[in-house]
Image 1 (cartoon, rainbow, N blue to C red):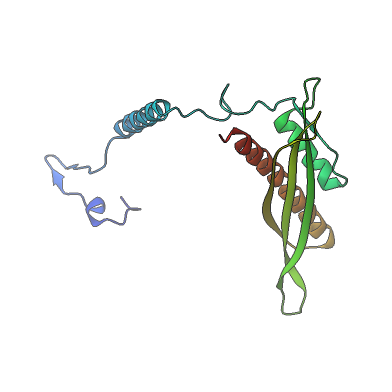
Image 2 (image 1 turned 180 degrees about the horizontal axis):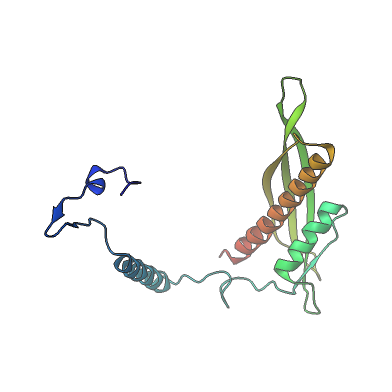
Length: 189
């Protein structure tokens, strides 16, 4: 083949009436082998008692049971929306309360030859605490961190748009990390 780096693939010896000998496995055989490997892996995981967290009975059922305290900022509003999308809105069965302290730091990272900043990193940290509504007992707590970056090389409007998008990406990533961290903490024996 013209894209192959192996000399044997480029110039396969001819046999018979000009037929080339292929050293590649047929596509169907490879797909069947992958399917068998997947089934073997699934059987091994089922035999060891593995249950996905999302499966019924696999992890703590938090949907509709967590009241999320308001986070006072635009970033907090975006985070609350993502948390509610993942955990559901607090319903009448809500017996837990989630509080989040969000901190984002904007760091200048790159300078041009004219000494202008053209690259920024956003470092985010969210301290979260899940408490029982009736007693105030802390059920789980943790800290998640993440970062993202944006470029400031375009116009003022382009830079502002890139900055807003970077803040949004960071807050959504932190919200997803909170849900994962909380679920794993509550599912731990």
